[in-house]
Image (cartoon, rainbow, N blue to C red; front, side):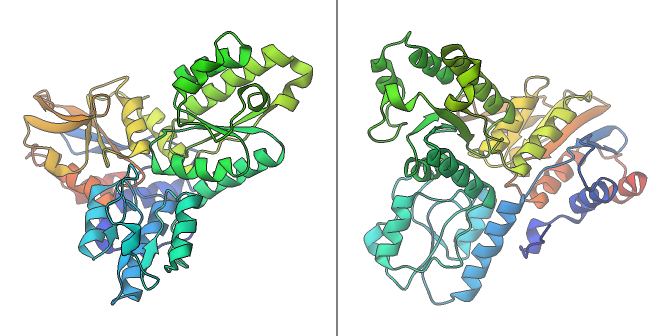
Length: 406
């Protein structure tokens, strides 16, 4: 796989060494068991796969190239490059300005842009409407579109479905930048509908079966379906695509439920005419992160620490998986670890920060799961590891621990 030129301060020699050791032993990623780091008194289970993915490194490389190549120009990002506060702050300090926030609210008016400016399209991609607006202004985008190729793959799948007269059911979060972009591209090719979770799918199934009134569709899915959506006609032939960072198991559950609904309505002999069996459109990194997390859950541990941006979808799903089994703390940096007694962390259910005391439970032999999302730099994970190790003064050095796993 291609290597990218990203700032060295995003890299960690310790974490990178562990990753490279695993990669050398298992280049095809057939083994998702975690790496055990035994520091004596405290052990860490490091996920087989975590941190920057192909799409993130590609986006970061292009962003820094834009700064280097355009020293005297205004450089803008449509919104956050990726969902990591450290990376986005660093880009802003380099002079890059954000046109919108993650919800699509305008920070800089379109009228302020000129044809001499450079605009970066983030890894999530953007809507066709915004692309057209930028082209009309005449701003420079060539070479600075960082849309992840796995997101573009979803768009190609949506077009394929549309070309065969299927409606696109998009499993995603309605307000997420990627889902907004995918919906925009999808509705150009086919009737499209965004579904958040299995609860909404069950409601949709009742509408397909005719056991729930059409009015409920208009109310429950308001602003989530394409213009001129015809409930009777457009739910007759469907296929499922997704936001690339959703839970793979949930996407499969949604697809299976809808297929069963269509099977019940149309019968086995007509199922292929009415339901398109699409291949999973999850990106490889999200899938690998989730597989690595499931393998972490096979191990005995006392707590889990997950590092990443609080608005990161793929990171949130890792937290969601881990917290089903053990106390899980979602932090964006080592700064959230106040001391050996207190940690601040994000409760994504309540969408707020909370504080937990005695999180290490005074355990003399603690086992900690440590992982991160696809947009988190390895250096941040390394800083979290160092902060936690500082509370175990008798811990073995990192250098000696590395020798033990080589």
